Length: 280
Image 1 (cartoon, one colour):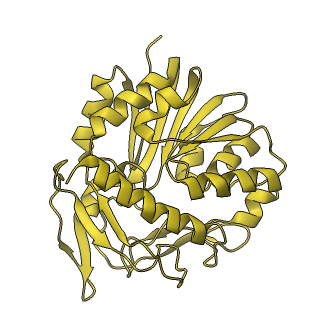
Image 2 (image 1 turned 90 degrees about the horizontal axis):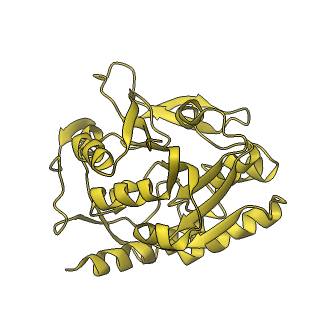
């Protein structure tokens, strides 16, 4: 099958997810807090981006826009981009409800972001469940670099590829997937419900994913002309990758911010974050 087939299936799947996530019956997204002017960003994100006041930010693969609005609440001037029409519609609705007409959302494929977004940005922001939907990580890196002004930076926070090769079977974590997914042979899956804990079914279940090793991600950014300034690995995730994971911390409303491995489990990195700068 072609990349267009994979993209179309993923877009349909995410259109269906966006409709569910926009009402957030599982409470994962903290919609009420964002609409009230607070931030839904995870601790790893906040530490990684630092002070964003006054910065022009391109939030790629923004989904329903809550993190985009959170960046605006923190003083940034963000624009969100996503390929799902349903997600962009939800994001625009949240912006209106939050009284943030200044925050724009653009419907476009991430590989077309340079053509879809005007000007250069101080920060390109990409987090949590974004690059695993892309077949070509080097092309993504080139697009991200093209959006940055000289001196601008990319912040990426994602599930660690070492964690993605594992699956939980009968309470044990065992290798299931190859560490590098070929572009033409993605991991195909059909999930009847979303990761948020919402029991409502997804209508179009088929989706395709790719595992990109850290080496491929970093090399792609270097080849795109960026300079890696920081790379961190973390023992938490903002979602439950394995059923045995337990809450790690909560926000002021009691919402689970992050999950970790259960006590007694062998520790390994569940996520990573990095910052890369465009030379002056």
